[in-house]
Amino acid sequence: MASSASAVETRSPSIVPIKERLEAYLRSFNRRDPSEYCKFYAEDIHVHLPAFPPVNSRTELEAMFRQGLSFFTETIRPTDFIVGEKAIAMEAKMQSVANLDIDFGFPFTGKTYKKGEEFVYEIVVHYEFNDDGLISGWRAFSVVQYPDPGAGIKKEILPGW
Image (cartoon, rainbow, N blue to C red; front, side, top):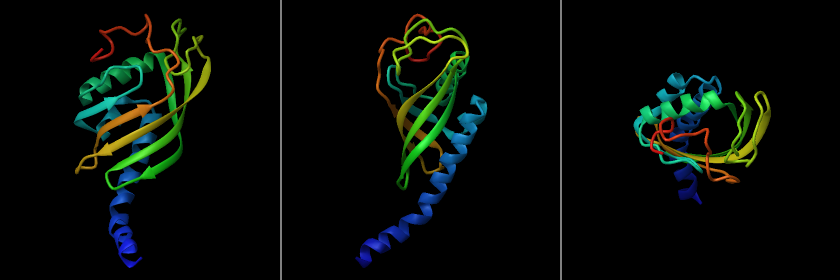
């Protein structure tokens, strides 16, 4: 028992800054300014999203988010966290509003949306942090109802597609 408690005491100080860092990132993300929240990413970040090609740099990820903001306004509402020393798993609800008429099936709901229409989908995200406290990778998981992003999302606007 004593060795288990000792391990927890040793890890606790390193866990707090990572969770605080993620919470700061989430507040920044919800302000919807990619140039602000992309500062939380390592230059060589690797991101895997359902129904989208992998993204392998901060520059590509910022471009993808800027394009995405033209389609949807999203707010992350975390519902649970599992915190490790250099990784955090987060369960959340994404509250979304269509910024224009979406005439192709949104990958996580399979539905089309009219401008201004609101919807929610659930995600689980696994974030990894490097030694500098930057997010070096993340993978998002969600039910994919419609695997083709549709005519509205083109290779030119989604890096790596």
